Amino acid sequence: MIYCVEDDASIRELVVYTLQATGYEAQGFADGKAFSAALAEQKPQLVLLDIMLPGEDGLQILKRLRANRNTADLPIIMVTAKGTEYDKVIGLDNGADDYLAKPFGMMELVSRVKALLRRTQRDVSNSLTCDGLVLNRDTHRVHLDDQEILLTHKEFELLEYLLENKNIVLTRDRILDRIWGYSAEVETRTLDVHIRSLRQKLGAKGDLIETVRGVGYRIGENQ
Image (cartoon, rainbow, N blue to C red; front, side, top):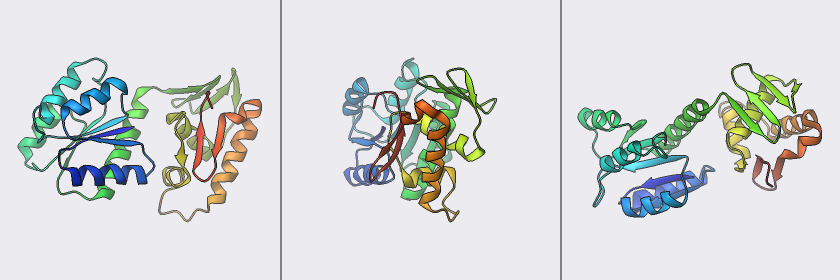
């Protein structure tokens, strides 16, 4: 889930629509009060935070989030019409992870979001787990119930991406973009072949990888 805190309704709706069209869950909020209420219910993966907000401004919200141990590590991209070096420095010095000045393109926004999520997800832990399955990024090894499973490089990357987003449905386009890249001419059948191979190598735990018809795949313990 990505939260967008932006008082301009047209920008907020476009950002949320773009993120959802790209495969992310996203919600928009017009001010800090509505954002805080949602945050109390669900902690997002990332926050897009405008500086110029009614009431509590973005910098005040940023400071409050960084002062709270439950949100101190929450990935935050500051989004604002202010594009001066001073404003960027203030935002970054107060704990923002990235800074995007208006006007910005939606493709640039999505690219920044992807990059920050990749970076922060990798920083969280060197190991990813799911129901006895353990993927270690440092050793580049995978174990299932203490037995090592030998994977190809692409199989490892695919499994890693699924585990990074455990219990989240990843569209086929998102997976192909992440693992093979937009520039590569890859048939969707390539993805199916790798999923089938992963399931075979996981044996009895192969059903951890679920096919969501018409959408893509997810891995999780509670399906």
